[in-house]
Every structure is written in C-alpha cells, then in structure tokens.
Image 1 (tube, rainbow, N blue to C red):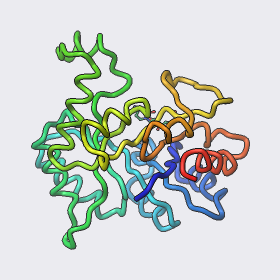
Image 2 (cartoon, rainbow, N blue to C red):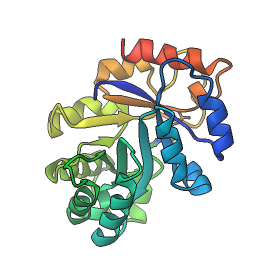
Image 3 (spheres, protein in one colour):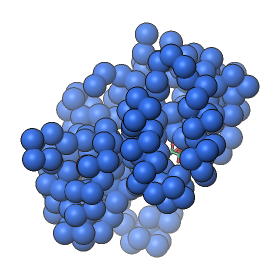
Length: 232
Ligand code: C5P
C-alpha cells in the first residue's frame, strides 16, 4: 500500500459514521475505527464499513498475554481490517503471537503496527509511575526496534519521528502518524502538530487525520486538501 490519508472516524454511533461516510460519493477514504465506535457498535461496524468500499485501520491497541492476543487477532483478521495494532509493551512474545493469530489460512494478513509509548504518557509519568528510567525518546525507539525485529509492519508515531524510525528500523517499516493540522486551522488538544505537506516531507507513510476533516464545514473538501498535500 502506498502513502494515504486515514480519516479517524471518532464517532459514537454507526448512524453518525454512515452519515459522515455518505458525504464521500467518489473516492472512498481509508478510515480508522477506534475503541469508542467499535465498543458501541460491535464487530459488525467493521464489516459494514468494509462493505461500503473503505480500507480500515482498526485501532484497538491490544495488550494481553500472548495466547489471548493471538486468539483475539484471529477474530479481528476475519473482519477484513487492513491495519490492526497493539502495544509494543506486550513484548516480543505477544507481538509474535499476534502475527500468528492474524495470518489467515491463505497466508495473507492485515498489516500489524505497534503503539510504543502513548503520547499522553510524559517522561515524568514514565519514570515515576512505570519506573522506566530511560529518556522517553530512547524508549520509543527501542520499542519500535523490538516491533521491527519480530516482523511487525510499522508503528504509530509523530511525523516528526518518521525519519528517525525509517533510519533505525528500515525504510519499509511503516510510520502511521497522527497530529496533523492544516497550517490555517486550530491545533485543539494536539501539542506537536505538522501539516500534511510537512508530514510528507518528513517521510510519513500514512497520516491519521480526525477533526480537521470530521469537523470541517466541508469534510470532503478538507479530505481532498489532505490528499493533495500529502499524496499527490
Ligand atoms: O482529531 P485528530 O486529528 O486529533 O485525531 C487524531 C486521531 O489519532 C485520534 O483518533 C487520536 O486518538 C489518534 N491518536 C493520536 N495520537 C496518538 C495516537 C493516536 O492523536 N499518539
């Protein structure tokens, strides 16, 4: 898969999501389904959005013992998601089990990417609560390397880290990057933001864009603007 814009469908119901997706009458965008929508509507929401012709990043961030994650991934892989994810903190054993669970009988599987440290966890919390006393950047890079070493396809990170991750984990190791804003729009609660054009320049493979598209007066125009800046 090449570079693409993924719209974060952070809606709480299927009806709201479908009303939003109905706006896209031509190109069907790649969409991200997160925990809120998945837990509200169940697995059928993935099948329904897939059936409408969208690619799907199922952002459920699994983290449990290897056997449980393997079995859960086996269920998710049948839903037709194109990208799924987990926490690299679950260790290599859990990530390997996830890959096994995801692999279908014909050998195909969705892409599997890892979350390293959540951006909501700052260095102080990591030191004081998690008792990880290394610098945050080093921890993120180390978790990314762990993910690459066991055969995962990429990580979620900031566009600002995309170059370093490609250098250390391989050019083909995917960087899926939220924290994207248009130059002339509000950052909201995102702290370190880049424009779609800057994310492209920094080497992001996929940008994940929520509110700049979902809350825009004209979401289709906002999406096409992202595609134009990031992909074309
Ligand atoms: O609305 P906005 O563009 O900020 O949405 C970004 C999406 O990416 C949200 O679904 C958010 O949960 C997700 N995300 C993020 N930062 C991370 C990981 C995920 O913003 N580090």
